[in-house]
Length: 293
Image 1 (cartoon, rainbow, N blue to C red):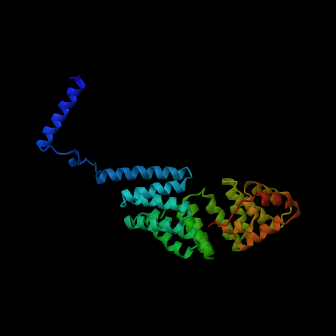
Image 2 (image 1 turned 90 degrees about the vertical axis):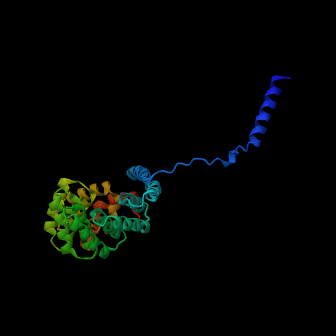
């Protein structure tokens, strides 16, 4: 008998014996399924959260939001993950979901000042300054030395036309952080609207010693021109400002940056001068401003 036939008959005999002996079939074997522990899920969630945060830093908020959403599903009790999700949603312009995520984070850790500040900033972004003020103030009770929070509080008060309180908030910001040029710039904006143009000019000059940004350059140029300075100095400053940031040629952009009526009017008069015509035309061609959604 060929060796292959012998093997076939031997295997057949073994199978017959196994069947008679009642050997279990393969279908009766239950496969082993690994179930991670809660601690392992938490570690995985934290790792995914870190990756989501890195994607935010890389300017990929939509991808970050997807990962952060997975992270909070794995560990819904970690407020840090909800905070990352909220930030990703905010940068993706999904304000409603960002608000929900922040609210959940705050439920988990109501004593974290940053969550109150974030909710206030979200209300500001949504042009709800009346809601922003108490949120920021509560955060400041928990973290009273936060200059950025005082800056946001000042912006909220500008939006509410409470200029005196806005000035106080911006001054508290620069007391805590003397080189906070944005807060110093906004002090000048408020002072100009309050009729104190000399002090506004002094503070804009102080801003430019810290940071030669387009906003204080154009604002200072407009204020000097309004005071009757017909030299080349304000014209040169205005041209430099428009080269740095063409969007400042547009009144809606100025308004979005919380410029009041008086400084907008002064800027309009300066930009309407014949000496500024070519710079204005170039800035208008290069402007990219769109109303924030």
